[in-house]
Image (tube, rainbow, N blue to C red; front, side):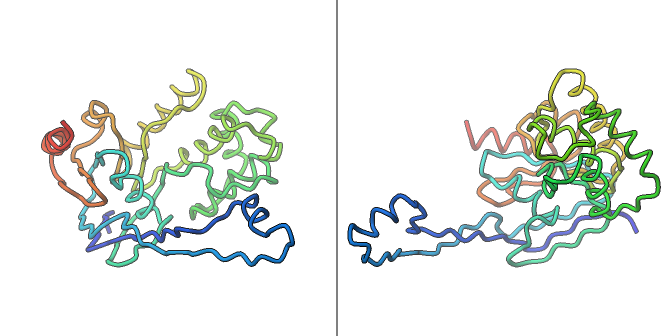
Length: 251
């Protein structure tokens, strides 16, 4: 069966708690000089709708950009499709292996080595590990982390963690690729290498969704566009029309 994504009336709500004082210093102050004052917080629970009544039908061959202002729901939509969030209501049907470049490094174990985290990430993603030596060689050549791959993750800098995270995301061709912006990946040589690998995966994936503010890059990589506003899909269709609606709304 061919890859697809179908969403019907999918919504996502986030609870927000107001009035909860988490300041330890304030608690000590309120506790009082005699140590007998009771502390009570007036907590009010509000619901914020992150995504509102999303209908979407994406088929094999679709390379879809997601555009819109900050806070419009672009990343939230990708996280919902990646399974990081669960819809509050509505339906989502997805067929195909997903690779997401959203929260890179999510789930890494600090006390495990770089190599161990790479193997663990691939097992969690559903990959059958048949050749550990090949995987270790790929990681060594791609990341340039050398002996650090044998050290626990807690010894890594943020840049080193980013390299390792990319190596777990870039060495399998998924059916569905989810990308949240292009990002800085370190020095010039590594950045060029990683962008080339990302482009290769984009070209070979059946479906791609790419959230970005870079309209010129979108025209090069995508065939359609979603324009999001206030957690809703305002338009889904041609890139030019989506761009026009976006620019008209924010002149």
